[in-house]
Length: 117
Image (tube, rainbow, N blue to C red):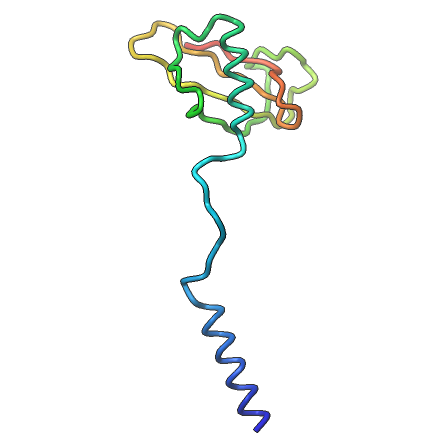
């Protein structure tokens, strides 16, 4: 009797474990970079570069990269370290694009930029 119960329990465990209807949790459309985008946009406005960018800064793209000498680093100690790069969408027909903004991922501070083309 115990052997039948064991087979039944294992079969039930396999059926439940392999089900495609498992709940993964709440998935939201936002990521954890909202504050990073905000800091980058404030820097863009401070420098007066916001004329070329779309005002929808919430949709700016954030990527992880390794800082190198092709960026204008405000602090050279970040060269070779992982940083976040925020890119804003440019308005149509702009001559010079909005610069990429480099953010220190732990402190959410601007550490550099790459001029737009």
